Length: 365
Image (cartoon, rainbow, N blue to C red; front, side):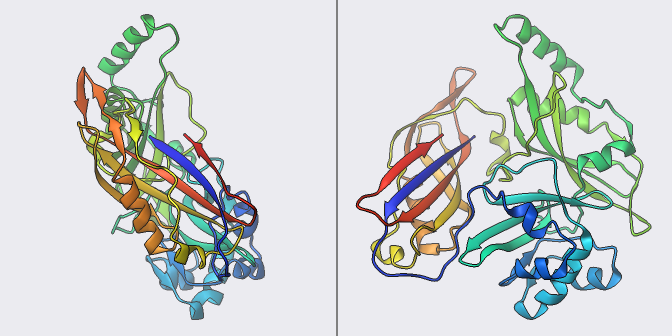
């Protein structure tokens, strides 16, 4: 579960050289979905975090395949290698506001994080989709590229017992029950499923029901550069069969054990409008937006007992203020099976500094 908080405030005196994260990323495909090296290079105006990429070109593969930060002196070469990929906007869309999804032959899927400054869109990082926090170099592929290789398993996977349970629930419900789950599925060089990690799910029933069925899948090997390679893919499992049109948040679960507990707790106290200090305001240019995503957990008493920044505003002091504020929030606990339970969620803060006689604020959930 997530929330979105937008805050617009009067600008302080002074100016700053900074960038803002774009709240829609509508510009993203037009910026790096290009084979023109000059256009690509224009989007690289500072160090870029390379989160892992596949290149058919041997020179590019040797220089830029493995995760690292690309320094300024290598951006010309990096732009040439990225342009050679032929990136295309993915038919799926990331739910974080400043992330674009792209695919390229032979089915690789990457996510790109953007910032916007006075000179337009800027690429901040790019790498295999859904690979946050992983230390292994395993390419991510679009499900459309992996599905034709499946030789064992139902195309709409769900455990038979869970299917019967959901059917029984639907019969007693006023409307059809729609169950879903998002999973990161990884296969080895032989096409055997070696890991199924849940990213988000409709319920605890769905977590196990879809997960057990996905473990039964088997594929022909996925080939890159003439060799069979282990790969991962973000897979949507639904019942009845009906595919969502978006990836999950892109935010890995803070605690996987809480995934599927969507009995949403209600916040009863704590200020969601967290302003920067006056000193920070002087460092933020007028009209610019900052975005932060904070993950947090709520214990069975309704207290926030863990919070951290998943997406930074770029201003560490402001990030700390956001985390400190979230830790003061108080909730009515969520319940499962009649008992209060610990749950985890995330919230996205959007701060806009504006000139004008007074500020305004809005909250979106």
